[in-house]
Image (cartoon, rainbow, N blue to C red):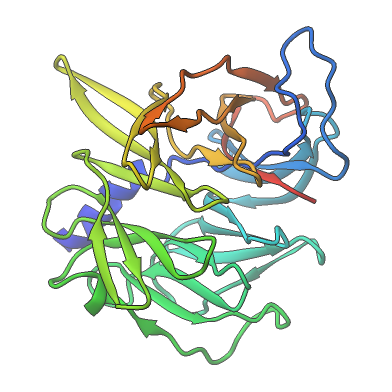
Length: 328
């Protein structure tokens, strides 16, 4: 029970979230800029209405116009994560009891339960070829990361086989959550509290079935891969001059250099565009877009201007919790 309480406390921070993607030829707009994004590009985002305890999965074009509701449900949707081909949106939904794992099929425009076994689910990621699903679940006392074959031709599965990666991820019982598949399909990053009492970032390699610590902060969560596989974004919570500071960091995996790209109390997921040229995150009823800082000689370039897009027509008293940028 103590372990489960630790999981829930951890995820109160881990899944205050958000996800992003953008287009290579899009000019970063401001109040005077009339640049238009490419056709068939959309933002998908989660809007939560606290007064009604309802979540809405919505989308708009990449100017914030033509808003459409894809799904409206009681409870909280979190961990929004698109497949590499943008055909699926993976998320967890918690209504009255367990957070369960779902996918939203963009072609059928319908949600489907991903894993039928009743448990708490803490994040999932589809492989680049859409053949495998990584997910975190409490099939035992604490969350472990599992892998299974993925087939979206069936609405639900009646029989499923899972492979538990826990023995290779942790040498002792630990909270292992939030797997994110690398773009080359050879590895994934995840969050674990092994060897620590706080969540930290680890990198698991399929070839030698081993994991390594890759972060350098005391608290790390909400990790996302860049499309090139060369960078990560993740959430940190630190004490700076006796004040709690929430930040989203951008990390270059080769040099391990980091730079803060968001530092407000709402900080959660920051996501990449499909090309990696842009970063995106929500702020109340706005979506913030910025150019991804470049890395030169192990140092990041300065942060450029951040630009905001107001999403019109959202439910009163609702806020955007997570956002991803869909290529088509």
